[in-house]
Image (tube, rainbow, N blue to C red; front, side, top):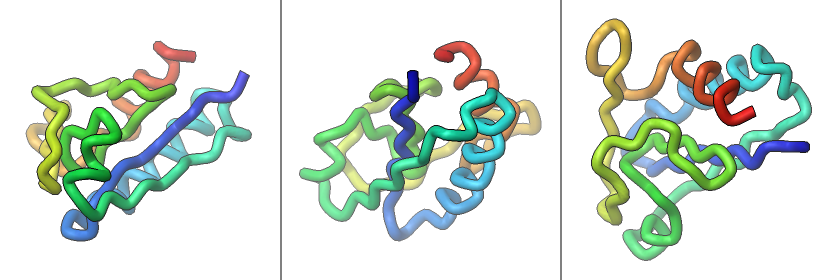
Length: 104
């Protein structure tokens, strides 16, 4: 079956664009070339509250955040990820691929 993949982001954090590219690469690597990425721009705390949003960018796979780190939050904030090479503004392609394979 297909996976529901969302990328939640806000205007102030440009990292979502690179994360989207990595997410597409990860989906393809996991054999999910048919699954589209649903980009969701959050403009208000009320919109953020409708999702398990933990800062921008937040990736949701079938409604779940594969990188839970103290969320969810409703303020429109940037997010920091722990990666193999230290803190970063988004998850690595490897982290995303692993998350997709674990849920696939």
